[in-house]
Structure formats: structure tokens, C-alpha cells
Length: 142
Image (cartoon, rainbow, N blue to C red; front, top):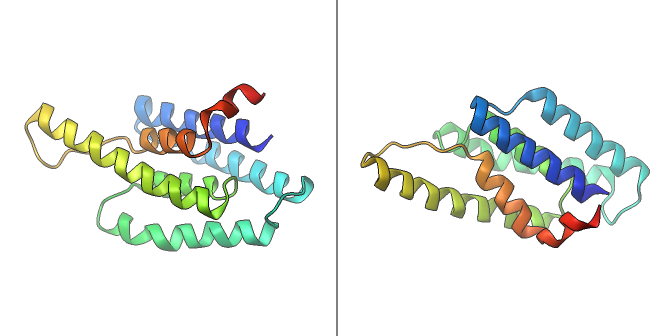
């Protein structure tokens, strides 16, 4: 049940980031609330406090990246919500893969535009990384 909600969350975030240049807080709050409700009412390997600790660690880890301009605040909030749905191993993998995909997309954009200082809509690499890390065959498990 968690994975389809997560896929909806990351795909909606990527779509609004591409179309509106923004990841909406109401969207992220809805995802966070669903993640917390699932953690409370559906037993899983991680307890709620463990998931909340993962959210806090994600925030503290990504703040320096935000401070140097490597991520937007919406991207950090999206990763924090994702932390409610993934295991710590999956979350770390998703972050690493998202940065790798973002680097490739950034290089491609720099080469195409022949200019440094390019930015990308990072919710797209985040979505792709979540799909890769969670094995996309889960898309058919609705």
C-alpha cells in the first residue's frame, strides 16, 4: 500500500516542478500525513519514531546542500516525506542515485546550452531514483 502512494507523491511532485517550477507544500503535507497514518495503523519493520528519526536525519544531512545552492527547499521537503516510506537503505540509495541522475542531466543541459550555472528541476531525478530503488515492478501491484 505504501509504494503506490509514494509513486503518486513523487510523480506529482515531479510534474508540478516541471510545469510550475514548484513542489507544493499542500501536496507534501498530504504525503507526510499519509506516511504517518500508514506507520501508525499498518504494522511494518520500522516503528513511527524510527521513521520520524529518518526524516530528521534527512533534513540535517541535506541542509548543507541547500545552503550551497545544490537543492531547493521543496526538494529537501520531498526527500523528508520520502523518508517516511522507504527503509534507511532505500533512502540512502535513492538520494545517491538522484544526485547521480541530476549530475548527468545537469551536464547534458550545460552542453546543450553551452553555459555553466545551469539548474534542473530536481524532483525529476528524485522520482526516477525512487522508481529505480523500489523496483518499478511495484507499479503493477495496485
